[in-house]
Image (cartoon, rainbow, N blue to C red; front, side):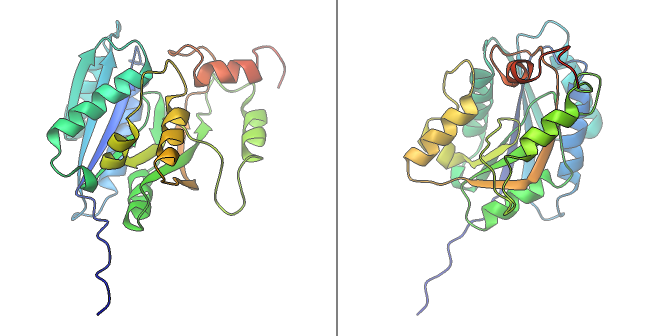
Length: 248
């Protein structure tokens, strides 16, 4: 008798979004997630969006609640004092862990409140999960706005040069990653780092014998600002590589 094929079914998708003083951007971010949810087939998995407001002072949590209610997306909006994106992200993961029975059938998606995901974002992650992937890293593009206008072309050229023609890449961005929940728990979650929690998580996933999938076809647009909400985060890296006034 042939062996029964392994079941890679995903019943639940949880999208975790940390946010801190993102009242100007979070509605756009949540609208993009809403479009990605609507792009799923009618018999697809249940989807819940978890917003973790990290001590915002600009009404981010209320703005997110209004947006999600208007978009009719199943959601949870919570406030905490995390002080770092990694801790806020893990706070959201903990909520998902408490509400999901089968961690091995839950796909945890991470993005950011200054990021817009593509319509096929969830679909593409789930396609990898259906093939047996346990962790998936996509790539980022910068939102073409005033924040990135003076260096966008240079950034796209430099970043594009790092992408493999085969469709793979060497990056991991917390704004665009997915992990099966049981694997995320085994690897220790997002940790307590002040920065680079995504890279740290990927190292720990590899340490437990799992090789993540890297796919250049999964793209999100994220802010090109060089003054960010996280010390030494993505905005800091952009500012170091493309200092303001350095020319286009």
